[in-house]
Image 1 (cartoon, helix red, strand yellow):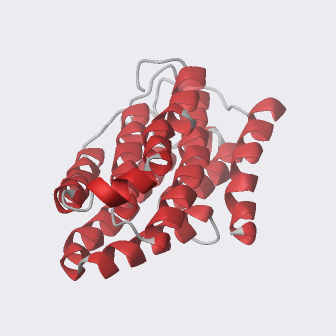
Image 2 (cartoon, one colour):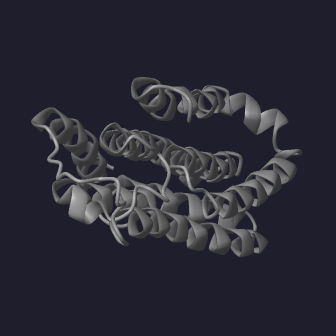
Length: 232
């Protein structure tokens, strides 16, 4: 994720990361027969892993590493919901995979736009971007809010469906799900607040404006992310 070029990161987050979930969707009928006796272990590992990875996100100083780790946390809740073997879990995981593919890919695009101008992916240097690239600050906010499942994004629908399915499967999972939801919002706000606010890096002496191609690319990520909820 981190070392790949921007096209590799976007394809990896948007398509390749979803192949595991797609494989489970295709094998769903087989899982209903053989997976019911083991799903307790897999769901427990997925939820605990998601919480631990969310904590790792809060310690990251690399933009791309933070976005990549957040993808792993989201896939943990997708796997948990899918293995509950319920209709809500199936549809919720399907919705969240699509939503996260759009949202995460857009965030990687934003990270690369900042990297091309600042010459670094470090959050210690990528500070005060609200002053440096004010036209892109709104896109940072929209995609970070999408990453934390704020309305009206498709992420919200997917997460509500998954929370419903996992809690109906076992109410004990509410403990991990509450941590997962809280830390998901925490690292998304950390990413936005730390990159957009603060004192701008003193080595940057110019003001930058995004190109129309970059704005179009971001719009093509954000529009489906918000419009697909109308068809759900």
